[in-house]
Length: 258
Image (cartoon, rainbow, N blue to C red; front, side, top):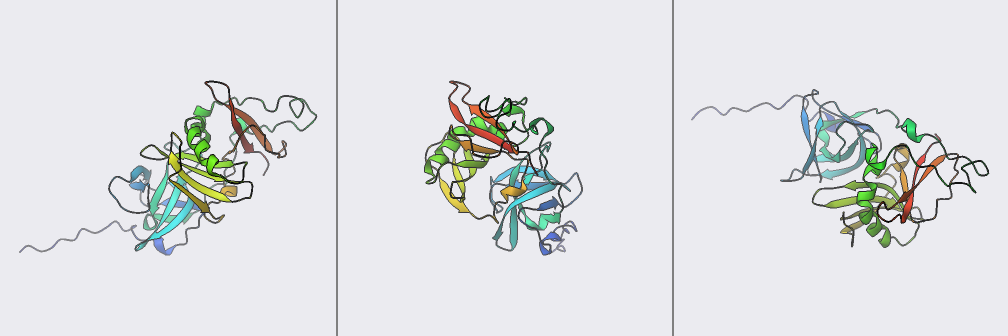
């Protein structure tokens, strides 16, 4: 019988699990820049759940963690402006804790709404249209119109309107995940078909699980006609209407104050 040959694993595998990777903070994939690391739709190695590939040494933001078997998995997302944006789960031994730059608003979206009483404030147009169409943006709002049926379906389940969408993300197999909050300050993770209907999952989230306040360049979306009662000096508002019939869908708004 021939001798058993054991192929060594790359030296960087298994290094990061001893480190502290914090939800809401940054992480970096291990390996050289030409390394490709599987990003999965669920925190497990399973057939058919690879949704993307991360590059080695890529900086990411950590959204959630889950202990599965011998490893801790992290749900991560790319930073604003990434060439290949994605979101999904990476095993902890393929990541290390890292500092990431604090997000900033894109320059074209940084103009605040004029205060009440000035041209363009209350009594004038509620908001000037954005110079950047939704489909050309780098944040989640680029998919807002496509995912609105899913947003509407999740919002219909909420018991404390108005509902504010913190993020809407297309998933595999025609599903969408809607992260949202209600008037009581509770946060929810809703999984539903992109075409809407009844949610397949509607789970509460803790503040520790979803660090929304650390993601300053991500917009909010308030479902319905009433504009959120927030200081227009610190938020930039945009009406969102159905391009087919002009029906008011809600208010997209960005934080412009530190």
